Image (tube, rainbow, N blue to C red):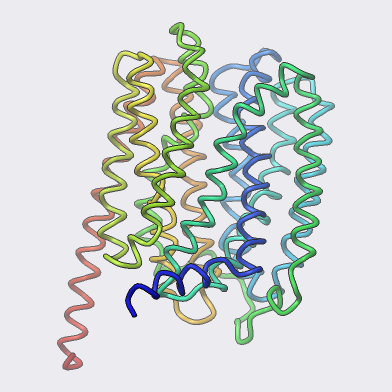
Length: 400
């Protein structure tokens, strides 16, 4: 009988709704990572500085960060379709508008709209995946959801450089607009029964879920270094004569991330969320410290493997953790709070590491990412120990 359980679980994580969610996040990340890969070079060509490159990534996420908890509530209150369709329209409009700007400041301004669109789309797809899962399969479902993102991330950088060689930035912008059209088809294919509002949600503005704040604080510290991988590592590698290794870095990172997510997707369902998340944080911080060492092709590959190992399980596990602990009617708000914390780390990290790279060096920027990542692991350890203690105290009081 035990041999049949994995098969039953496999069927539960490959329903029609979940397959649509997996495809949706894959297409979204294919477009967004294509832009993330090429826009730093585009800004440099327009005369932009490293600080402006950092601000570019902040612009794509800052509005999204502020809205994510509210978006989560909107999805539950108004229904998924009324949230995702405006998001797709905004993303498509932003990619069309990117054909026009001729200054770094204009590009940054346009990307504000793209950030709103990406937030609306990604939060909706994520929430639909959560709704279609159960506590026993939630970790695996979210791992598969982000595995789809990883597959897109593996394809996007080589595709981006290929598009740049074939037709420059205009061709890349057109392709991302086409991908927005694909998302529209996927979103409208979902049945009304899946995208309908959740009964019993209380209307009103709530900035965040307090239950999700401790985990979210730890995640913000971990993700301070995330945008530096796309914004600064390619420029750093080219400046050190390792430009050819950049494509290999993203290839190794993406492929190993895929392997780890495929193999470890059920880990947090089986052994516990915190027991998976904490080692992932430690490994992620170590990866940034490796990039702070004298850069070689070997150190880049080592960092790619470490980043992929930690990243494969970290966010899916933390997402499952905050959803598990959310009360009824607040799952969207809890997941939005966690997602906003990811964006907060990216916003702060883009500006902070860009500033440090401008004033000191790229290596100093990556060292900063390693330090904040280690602090994130420490915060998570301390808050989880406090949570376990308080839960034990409550159980003792109630005799159980």
